[in-house]
Image (cartoon, rainbow, N blue to C red):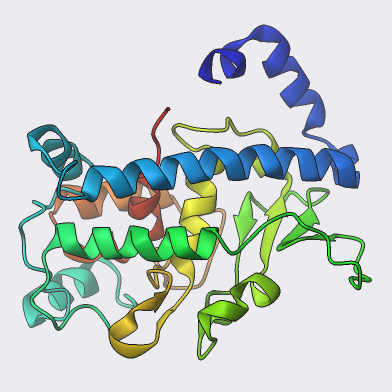
Length: 260
């Protein structure tokens, strides 16, 4: 798969698709089916990496390299010290009621998070409901590839007070033009972008057992803006060893920027 993505022909075809014509339903469905296949592989690989059998020295080093936090570190984002660190970086830093009051390690936190993301992922598809009258709704995805608004987006509260067995019929993800030009896997890819969006969904249920990871696009002050340098802020969080890397969707996305 990766060799195909590197071919000149594949790159050329990809660039040709990065125009309004991508809005054609069959092109969009094919693209999303390929992206979903890649995303499943990435999520399942990370689930294996975080499992008791897969959590070896190499995976622990990789975890630290990505997040700047050791896997055995206890999550203390609700501590005064960690809140002050976040507030100094971004006065409007988000608060998550589920982060984290169970003496849980960063490794366990991500392990549970990936399990939830994979559960949500398995509920979404490009299956078109016969009763659907919206021409741009393909399964759980809105085809907005004629808009240069960005790559993808969700409204995070869709999982609030929602029983998990209704995810398939309720959850919606907007797909914009930039998504089309991305590689399937790796850095800033379609797979990592979808993981980024799934992580936004709010946690819900008892002790936050359901939903996503409740992440935010940080810094949050002033709302989302193309003018903000989100990757730089993510790097700053990692380098300062702030546990808010587990609340920032751009840091979480980096964990899924792998090639398989």
